[in-house]
Each structure stands twice: as C-alpha cells, then as structure tokens.
Image (tube, rainbow, N blue to C red; front, side, top):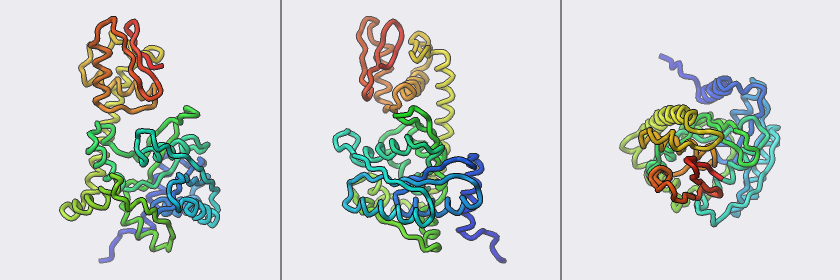
Length: 328
C-alpha cells in the first residue's frame, strides 16, 4: 500500500505556509537572522519558496561577531546566496565584550538579539529547531532555572528593544523539525552552507551536550529530543499561566510603576516571588535567578522599616521608601 505521507520538501513547505498564515504575516516585513549555517540556510530557502505563494517582504541580516578568523568569509557567503535569491541583505558588525560576566557565548547572543530587536522589520525569523530546544532545556535544567527558563524557546515570543523600547515578534517556524530533516532537505536541494568551527569546541556547554551527552541519551531513548521539546511546551503553558497570575496581582499592587508593599504582604511567598519576577523584568528588562528574587523579597518585606534598601539590578537600583518599592 502506498504511503500517503507527503515528501519531506512538500511537508516542510506546507508547514511553513501554515505557520505564516496562523501568525497573520501576509504583507509584513520579515527579517531572517542568517548565520549561513545549515539551519538558517534551509529557512532562507523555505521562505523564498513561501514568498512566491504568500505576499510578504523578506530581508536578511548576518551578524559578524568578529571572533572567528573565518568571519568575513561567512559574511561574503551570506551576501552571495541572498543576491542569488534576490533577498535584500546587510551585515551588522558587533563588538562582543569579553568582560561582561556573561561568558563569550552569552555575550555574543546578547549582541545578536540587540541587532535583531532594533531592526525596522515587523518580525524576526530564527532557524532554531527541535534539537536546539532539547539542548536549551538541558542547559536550563543544569542551571537550576525556574518554570520560565525551562520553557526554553517558544515558536513565537515578544522581546523589547533596548533602544526603541518597542516589542518585537520573534518567530521560530522550525522548532518542531529535527536537524536530521533539515539536513535531508538541504541535501535534496543541493544547498550549500558554512560550518562554524566553534560548534565543535567542547569548552562551550551547548557543544558538550550536543556532541557528548545527547547522542548517548538517544541510544537509550531514541525519541528524547522530541519528548524534551514536548516537555518544554508544557512548561511554556505553565509559565504563561504564572504570568497571567502576576498581571492580575500587579493590577492590585503596582501604582505608576511602583510596588505597594502593603498590597503584597498578604500573598503567599511563591506568589510574591512570581509578582516580583514579573515586575522587575517589566521595569528593567532583566530576568533574575530564583535566589536573587528570594533575597529581594526578604529585603523588601522582612528588613526593619527604617532600613535602607538599595539593591543593584544591572545598571539600575531597586529601592524601598515609604512603603513602596521602585527601580531607578
């Protein structure tokens, strides 16, 4: 009996079109973050095909971190494939700080997102896939992340530009697709892509998980990437519910951006922590660890009424005065 399953190319193209229609992206300007690697190369090809069937504007940006000696060559490669596909393209060169305290990998990611979020596009398209999701979940587990961190990456999320202060939609249409399928698609269409030598460096935690840990897990649990991605999806639902609760609590406890301490004292400790996490992120753009949130909760609610509370949060300071907490 013949299989009714679509060929891989038709399946991925149909899934992408359905994704674009679901998020009402017809007529919008989509910006692809193009590294030139396998994943973003496949997404560029898929978007080029979708553009012929659905009206949207497509452009691409390559972010040159100037870390690898191959960096300029990668930028030229991306410029070439975009020229062939008639996709407007530009290169953004960034300086990755070595002393940020984040580590080189996280600092480079922060610089990338700063460029993407400050673009004039309506939405940013990224090529993260199912294996990336599994790696992210494992990393977050090992860091002791809370529910929001364990939710890993969403198919759609909104982040605020630090410069324009405007929220930007970030879309990941390949999040349910394995890297193996992307490789099969690329080979079927004879696509070329670049290989970043740093992806083999086991000094990076993500690479260690990718090359040493996940292959061993897959030997014993062949569907582990799929099931971990499903767990991340469940956790994303839980994180959304916690955010809804925080918004409800904020309506009663936040006045003109300031937190009224008398209004949160009757709440349970986990509920106060949930509200603090939401309020601090809204006011500062930063996401703090559970330990820091607990320390802030204790200082705000348990210290003497005349104690001077001044807690540094990034480049800002959280203070307590006259029964209110505020961030300068």
